[in-house]
Every structure is written in C-alpha cells, then in structure tokens.
Image (cartoon, rainbow, N blue to C red):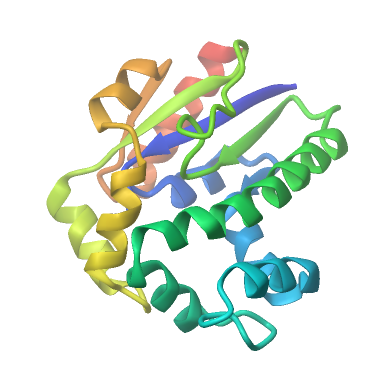
Length: 189
C-alpha cells in the first residue's frame, strides 16, 4: 500500500483533491468531528481539563471555538486529548486498507505531528492566496482569529512544498485537477 499525504495551506483544497484519487481517504477533520459527536471518553477528558468550556455532550463547535480563542494553552490541551484518538483511528484505517494499492491521508498537521514515514508520497496542494481567502470566508463557521491560531501551528508553506514529491496547482478547475491527479498516479505506478 502506498500512502499519499496531501499537505498545503488551510483552505487550499486538500479534501476536494483527495476525492479525485478514487481510493480510500482518511480525513482527519471528519474523524475529529465524529469524535466530538460520539466519544464520551474524549468529552470526559476535555471536561476534566477545561471544565469552563466543556459541560455538554456532544461537544459543540461553539464550545471548542470559545476554548481555543480564550487562550493559547487551551488548544494544546485539546490536541493532547484528541491526537492520540486520531492516531488510533489512522492505525485502524491503514490496517483495514492494507491490501489497497493507494490510500489518501488528508491530515492537516501531517508533517507537524511527525506522521510522515520514509515511503509516504507527499503532495503539496498549491492555491492562490486570494482563492484560499475567498473559500475560507464562505465556510459556515468562518473565524479569522481561529484560522490564524491554526496557521501558527503549521510549518511554512515553503517547507511543505520542499518536502513534497509532487505539486498540484488547484485552480478550481476539476478537469485540470483530475489530469494532474492522473499524471501523478501514472508516475507512481
């Protein structure tokens, strides 16, 4: 199995491009959302660490946003609880898909959390800043302060691009993007 990790800026289109590969996808953002809705153990741990913000189950986005924006340490406390759960889910996903030719890893802090392995293929998703900002503003829970906090956790875009084996320019044209994806898959085979 070849693991293909997609990296890039917040809002660059990693999830959109992941769907074009036609293979199993591990989407960390979706997994985190499931954890907040269904994992009572996670809730209890967060409630213990941050009782002012976590008092109702399932965990609501508003509570998370308030906790993260309240101070810089809260985000660290949340990730200390959630990241081990995500790593376990990733392990299960990889085990379930071990016979597949490719899997896609759509994990926002893939490099930052040292999840990259020697044989993984890293693809950098490049988008214009103006397009990224436009897409971010269209999101339901757009919050510039929150996005800036998350960006501070990330490596620079130039570092991510340097680490990548391939670059896909996301020009929001599905046809062009699909051609890029197919070219990369051909090169890997």
